[in-house]
Length: 248
Image 1 (tube, rainbow, N blue to C red):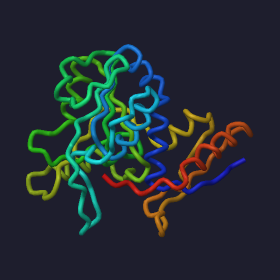
Image 2 (image 1 turned 30 degrees about the vertical axis):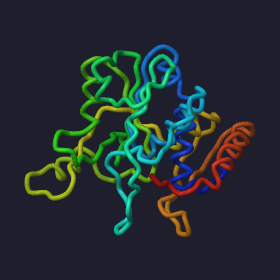
Image 3 (image 1 turned 90 degrees about the horizontal axis):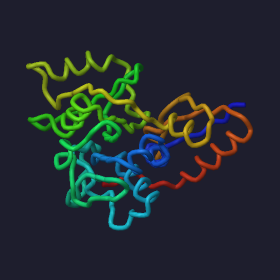
């Protein structure tokens, strides 16, 4: 049996957050290593869910929890101050720290969560870069390549692109190009589809996209599985209804 659901971008961010909080690699890092959640809009939901799972959500807010930010033309972003990334060492949130403070301490078994602006059909993620020195993604890659820390990329389905990420990045980074640059980076993406599989055991696929009246950018998902898995998926997705549009 196939059941279908419309999942808005805000619902998708919350769903990804719930999935990341239950991810076995994240749980292992929380238990005995370091978890770094680099600020971003989707990662704000991830941080809420992870901190809630370990009983330390008090004092965290998604307001200001971002660096680069894409808003609609003419829209104004919040003036909330940047609170830092979320750094959790052996289950304890070290408030106010950023990836820059701990990058040289990251080792195999530690996990970094970094969002993306795009990913292609191969699951290759990329981030847009406005920072002249490359921004936080280069810090994360240092730990991954240099010391085998793990990089997971929580990213919504609305970020999927048709072209090859490497080719698109080369075009953005050309000397005569205008606008932000783009950097493909080594990380395993985690989308709404992965979250549904992890949390319910059901298989999910994207069937369509878009809409109006708040459904702009939404994903129309098809979910298949046993009766128990479909019931769990239905309960999960119904719990996301009413999630307000993302504002940071």
